[in-house]
Length: 455
Image (cartoon, rainbow, N blue to C red):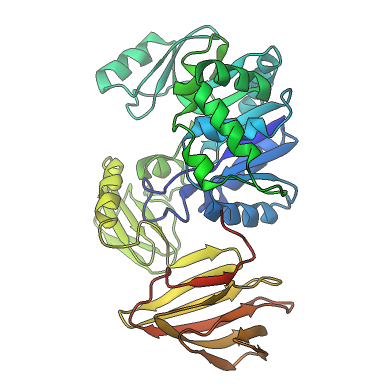
């Protein structure tokens, strides 16, 4: 069985912890592991392989976090633009043996009862072997209005229902045969594709064409123009709501999609006053608060039922019960900043950079280049750069000259000069970069040569 892991998401519901370039599945929230890593660990107990579906930026995050788990043989498919779950799953299934049973899971869900989880997976696998399309219905614990519901008759699906209002959700809870739609599935790759071809033939044909047109290398990278041709649709609309082969397994597995800070508060460990545990938090007569922050001290006095999230470059304060409105905050932020998109520390294919200071005419960064990695060969039209190495040995190329920079040595990159930095040593290169110019945006990079070719 292969675990298809869907890594989509734009990082809006848990902002400012989560951003577009660091969505919640890659943030290490539990015991220094991310939800993505927990997903891989959990499903590796029953699946032989994982097949990661992501965009280019998330590919590097997934690659790094899988290496931390010691997993190096994973399969990857990169989408240049998201087209929802039906195309993503179709592309993955087209790349597999039609008889392969796949377990499709989001990468950002928490499952606490792994013993029960393995039981329902065994049941799902058995049903999938009989050519059924299996979905997992979460046994509801309250009248949730933020989830879709599955109406069941035993293991058969009577209907899928959109997110209800509170009165309708309450009636679903009382009826006892309605389940939260988990977004997890199990089936043979070929059976799913046959049903997709039957009910959404355009998605099937354009996905097949896109996969056939991909560059022929180990990493499956779909071309942008091919991806755009595929209709955007969810697996529920494209197949599950139309097929007669769908089965649902009631699943009481301690599941949460962590779709809000209120949901996150429920899952984090707490102190004697029901504040989430945080070594940077000083609490004076405060209780029932979610406090998140890793850099600065956070002091609360005589407050309760608050959400306080400090990410270094942004501060969120909300009443508990109102955190679903964070999406409205992100909509405002998109208008004039990049705070929805990137953290102070950004992860790149070669390592990380952290913005230490950002002003209109200069920017200071801390750059860490991993062993054996290098930045793209590039130039800038609007800025000069000063590099100071503080640890390790950097191999620097500027125009036609290549030289070494050691700790406490520096160099100057003039505007327009073609340059590159490589780490050919045995420890990470850490350097301070000072950018000076009239425009310091990350898009002022002209790449001459890049180790990872973009599509």
